[in-house]
Image (cartoon, rainbow, N blue to C red; front, side, top):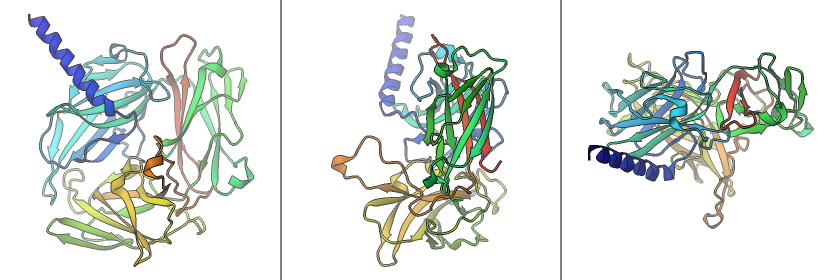
Length: 429
């Protein structure tokens, strides 16, 4: 009877998971409105991307704030995926050593903040859960307090370093892209690793600034030589250069940075007005240091960056002519590189500008203004148009971006795609 009861509980739990997973996206996504400031990176490297070597001993750190400011039963698990971010054919026991699901026990409450919150952190792998195979992985976090609500998902890559990748920045092959785009070639060396049929077994993915939304995937080899695979396609691995990202320095609410117009303390909290900005698509490229669209959480007003940083309502203004065929959004790593309705800009005809707002924790944020073509609701496709930063930001081949190359290997008869190498580099290296 005891075993029947245990089995019944397991079936009920699995049914609950499957019900919640109907809304699951194999992307970086936050499913509830109380979760903010989600970061996922190599432990200790706050601006890194969640890509780690299987044998390096490196760990990943997930952190987020719950603005409900209570304690919830957050549980996590990981799912092994193929290179196209679909679940692989592996069973959990084949890629997880330890528990297949565990509770997040590391949490702390905010200290002396106007807006209270609970801060959660998770390090992977840990003594309860370890991955055993290379691959694309999806980290899932559930709220088990009520009905196992799916809270957030994050992508990460674990690679088994078997090859050497040598990248090279090239001039765009197409004349029309010479001044606006960046093209990449690279060579994969595999002298100490046996690959029987590189043309069929090897594929590559290239990311710009850690973004999966515009990643170039399923790149096949161009030329094969003994111990060497060349990826030097013409006009295949090409990205818009963009411009250096705009920034909002919110680290202090006492001494404002030069692009902050005003900081006000109200009964509801802090309000920051950014200075009115201008469109840059017609301006010459200007170089300056940025975070390639990323952000960091930090305050200079208090000692504790994590627990004492305030949440602030930040208002943005972009002076520009109205475009009837587009919608405009704030865009960057803090929006998960997604078009999200809370970050939509509305046009104010009286001032001739787009206005928008974001609730942000104190820190230093990179962002851009991204346009999306308007689509009538009756004709809305399943996949929305790609965000276009060139409309008001422009593109330049001189812009400094970070690129990540991931090499996938799937020999004949294998049940999963194995990342066998990765490299991240700057376009001005």
